[in-house]
Length: 116
Image (cartoon, rainbow, N blue to C red):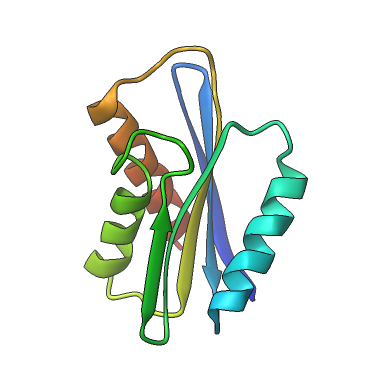
C-alpha cells in the first residue's frame, strides 16, 4: 500500500480529490477505501477503479452508472497500469454537472493523480 500521487480539481464548486496507490492485493483496496471514508466523512462520493493480479474492479459509489468508475478504469487500461488503485473523492458543490461533464470531471481528476 503505497500512495504514489494525489491531485485535485474543482468544477462548479464540486471538489474532486484523486489518489493513485500502488497495491499488492484486493484486501489493500478495502483498507485504503475504509481509511479514505474515515478521512473524508463529509464527501458525497468515493469512486474508484483498480487492477491487481488477475482481478479488476470499479465503483461509481452512487454516481450515475458508468460516470465515475469506468472513466477511472479506462485510465488504468490506457496507461497499462497493474497493481494500481485510482480513487476520486467528491465533495458535492451544489450543482449537478450532467453525465458528460461529470464523466470528464472524474477522468480529469484521475489524470491529475497519474501525472507524476
